[in-house]
Each structure stands twice: as structure tokens, then as C-alpha cells.
Length: 336
Ligand SMILES: C[S@@+](CC[C@H](N)C(=O)[O-])C[C@H]1O[C@@H](n2cnc3c(N)ncnc32)[C@H](O)[C@@H]1O
Image 1 (cartoon, rainbow, N blue to C red):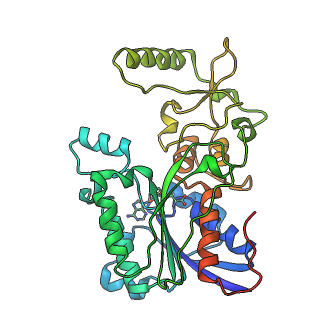
Image 2: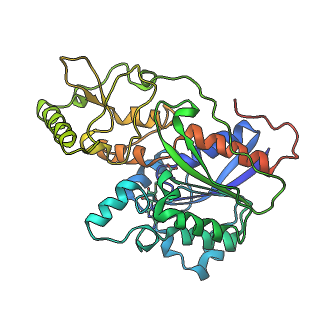
Image 3: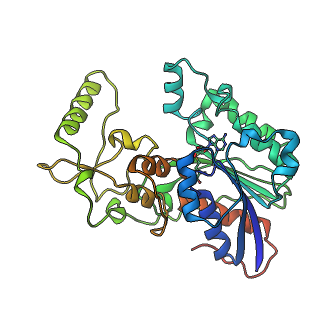
């Protein structure tokens, strides 16, 4: 079986790696991740619980440009769901409020793209897949995305990025994300995958039995309702979202879900307090398999699941990337 090697940067708990692995195996390849990079100790704990021992570089910024060729292994596909907070709507407004820099000017997280670029320049993998929030497209009137594309296109064939929504790929969650792929060699036009529009409902992703601790307290329920009322009076649209299990999708579940669960409170009838999703349900809404382990607190698990990529979508994108790279290979099967 032919091998596909990869690098899993900003790995989180490995959503990109699972997606690539699923697509590769389905297409008859064997995949090997040569190195992952993740700075958060709790995410590393979860990652290590789910994958075979893999070389780790915690802070990718610790690798100087002059060290890339020695410290970073050769690989076929570079995966990077780079931090989105400096570009996301919520992250930008939070940073403005705290008078902190955002976008590329955030020297902590915003300029990590340039670390990816250096690795691409020096290691020249055959392809890459980047993922970020949809808002990256409009951030700073599109200038940041233009700069990203301009830089990548100096070395790679990079088709126009694509916004894909998890709810169109069999997950009951609205999660629109931008995907950017690139290839060292241009053969023909790359096509992003078409949605399968598989019909699902939120209830398909819920536990049959859940711990009572996920039902929100009278106090929190009251404060949610009061805040919504206040926001309505002040002309602000935001507040909690009560989600009926029969709905076709939840709102985007963010890494802040643990705070008060306002993006998605599961409706349990008019006379009963709603409940939060459990961490397992959030992982499920992101397409993670039931076998996925998260040996961390609920708070960390919510953060990890909310930060992750939607597996169903990334698996399809990886399928298209592998097909593009190995197009002439016979017997390639498409993901159903
Ligand atoms: C949006 S999440 C990535 C999700 C992940 N790609 C997946 O497949 O589910 C971004 C991750 O980058 C990590 N990170 C932030 N700065 C980093 C750095 N300097 N080096 C390595 N990882 C970093 C964060 O801890 C976070 O887990």
C-alpha cells in the first residue's frame, strides 16, 4: 500500500489528522503523520491518548527559519488549522476591547501563517490544507486573505479558497469555515468537494441518556432570559439559542461553549430547564468517532471540541486533495 506522509500543525486534538487518515485509507493509502505541533498541554494529553507516539514540537515559533530543514521532517501534505481568534468576529471585538492587536499584528497568534509559509518554502510538501474561520475572507476588507494568497501563490498553485458549511456534509451544526489548498504542481483545475446535503437532525447527535449536571440551573436559565430581553431592548441580536432536537442544525459551537452554553441549549419542554450539550455530543457534532478519547475536564473537552475542525468536511477536502495528487493512479475510490 502506498504511504502518504503528513505534518499536523496547530493540531488541537487531531481533527485534521483523523480526516486525512479516513480519506487516505478509503482511497487505499496508508498514512503516516511525521510530526505534530500543539502548544496547549491539555490538547496534547487528548492527542496522545488517541494517536500512536508521534514526534511533537510544542511551540512552532520555537523553530527558527534556519532550523526548519533539520527539525521539520519531509512530508507529502501539510495540515494546518491555524489559530482563528485573531481573525474571527468575536476574537477581533474582544481584542479591540482589550486594546490588543488583531489580525497579522497580533504577534502572539496572528502571524503564525508566516511560520507555515516558511515551512512550505523550505520543505516543499506536495500539497497543503489550511483551515480558518469564514471571517478571514472579510477581515480588513479582504486584505489579509489577499496577502496570504499572494504569498502562497509565489510557491504553490492555489485555487480560490472555498467556504464550506458542516451542515451540508451530514453534520447537524452550522459551521462555515474557509479552506485553502495548494499544490506544488498544477495539473488541471482543482475542484473542491460538492456538499452531499445528507439530511440529519440535531437529535441524531444527542446522547440517549445524559447526566443531570448538564441541565442548567434556575439561576443561569433566568440570567439567560434576562440578558436576551435586555439585548432585544438595546437592539442587539445576540442571546441564547434554544435548540429543538428536531432542528436540522445547531449554531456554530465555539471553544467558549463551556462558559454558559448560550450558542445551543437543548429544549426539553416548556416547563423544564434546557440543558447544555455534553462534551461527547459536541465532538459528535464535529464528526469525531465514538472511539475518540478525551481524558480531560469537561471545560477542556468543550474547548477542544469547539476548536476542532468538522471531520466530515475536511475528510471530503482531503479526498479531493489525494485524488488530485495521485490522479493517474488506478483504483482510486471516491468517498461516498
Ligand atoms: C483552531 S485550533 C486547531 C484545530 C485542529 N487543527 C483540528 O484539526 O481540530 C488551533 C490550535 O493551535 C494551537 N496553537 C496556538 N499557537 C500555537 C503555536 N505557537 N504552536 C503550536 N500550536 C499552537 C492552539 O493551542 C490550538 O489548539
